[in-house]
Amino acid sequence: MKNEIYKNLLRLEKLEEIANHAEADYGRDPENREFEETFDRAYKNEFDCFLLVSGQIAKMAGIDEKTARAIVKGRREELKRILTA
Image (cartoon, rainbow, N blue to C red; front, side):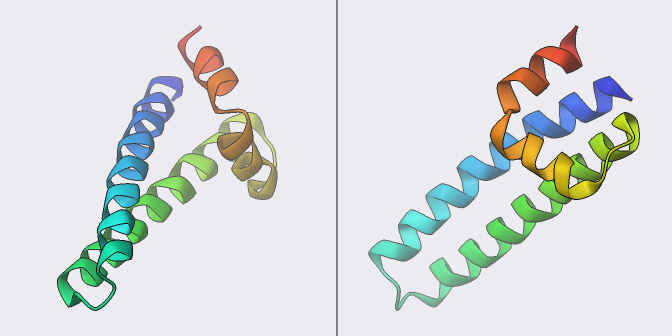
């Protein structure tokens, strides 16, 4: 389970990068419909993966999902070390 969570965490980081780039494109040209749609999809993919990782951590650690979400957002490097130990 730890390996799967770690892989999903790395995937989340990549999706965050993609969403950030899409947001920057959209911010430069907010009238561009394609940029808006791309950003919407990228953000949805990022958020879905964030919820997946948080849910996996909550299940593995026996904690509530709110706490797991806080860990993913605020203690990511520590989480990565734990998952690879």
